[in-house]
Length: 265
Length: 306
Image 1: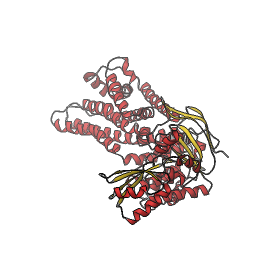
Image 2 (image 1 turned 45 degrees about the vertical axis):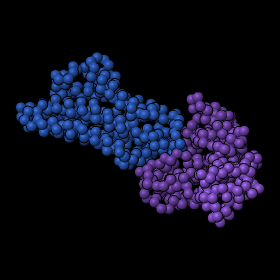
Image 3 (image 1 turned 120 degrees about the vertical axis):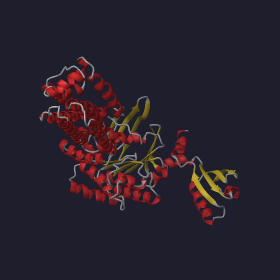
């Protein structure tokens, strides 16, 4: 069996499995958080709302990209291999004539589709709520048209990178969700918001760089209200994010091709 | 012809030895792997199907090293012991998926899945999700996925567990058919008589070591030196105990009238069971339960180890 064919078969099978799982429901709930909070803020601030840039930064940057997308990616991405181990069904796959690496890639791709769909939908709807806020509050200038595209790309990059990292963690650890939660809350959220060079150790730093370096409206709002800016160039940020994704997947495939699974009977 | 050769095969889990210096040769036909729980049977089988690597020694299966050996996996069918399934799929869906991963087209996989399920006699409920299946139905699905790609070597870990008597008969018949078709079958069990009804070639392991290998009758001879223990619950346990003591094959009997039970030792279990069948049929002592206290191989192995 070729790598590509195995990947395609496992991708299809995993898509079905995710759709039937409770994980999908949980992911949907997490994806709804930014939309729900944004709706609530929009309703409360009928007369005097925050500037749309700030609204976007809080809802899409802080809530969606820093919290919701990593959570969804963790729930789905870590399951790429760990779910097979937990359910003890990995035996069936490991005793088939297939490249072991394709198990990770096929199942990760299925998870990625789910994370992408949810994060992009959440991003789009949250943006529309912010846009609506801008339209009502006439004192604010309208949001530039290309901001939505930039936000969608950042949401997609976050989905790609986080899901790959968590899928790789799932090939190394027995309980990847715990490790993933610790990574997200300690390294990503904590380090990314500390001043200094430590930020460069986080995925958030590159996502932030990619978002803010070419959206001066958001960058200005960010600098005024949250933190000073120390950004990588967009091309550097993009190449770092893609490198992190590739390295994570290579390590995951390498680990899976050598790992022995001790499953309880 | 040796299809499986293990030489000083060992597998450790940290400080715990799962298998120690196992040297065996297995040829064509059906071989029973028996041993009590914790003997190391699943470890041996997982080494054979390439899920684990040996810590020491060597293992050759169909002439190849098994760990992550894709070419070998085309020739092996494995039914694991764990009760694990893609519960959201139905039986056809699961077997079909695994066949597609073995290289078959969608159409061919579906056809083969149907045939394999026919062969294991899973006729009803095929379209329901596996999570709704009984234990016996799930065992049949495991067997179906193991035989569906027509492997040369079948490795079956406790395939009779959870099956009702009819199911056991069906599976034993199927395994016999497969053996007649020229398949090599390695089947593990912790119940001696299950394996005995299938093959006379057995491999006994205990605490990760090979204890005996050979024909069942030879092993039986070893065991026949020891009496078998039987527990019986009967309404008239005292009267039954007195009656049983008159049997030549009954060596000792302990009666507990409060619990209406008795425990006895017999030197000829088969003869004793035949006579007990007549007593039960007559219904004169109100026998409600009878079980062999040596049914588990733990007791058998204790004898052998001694």
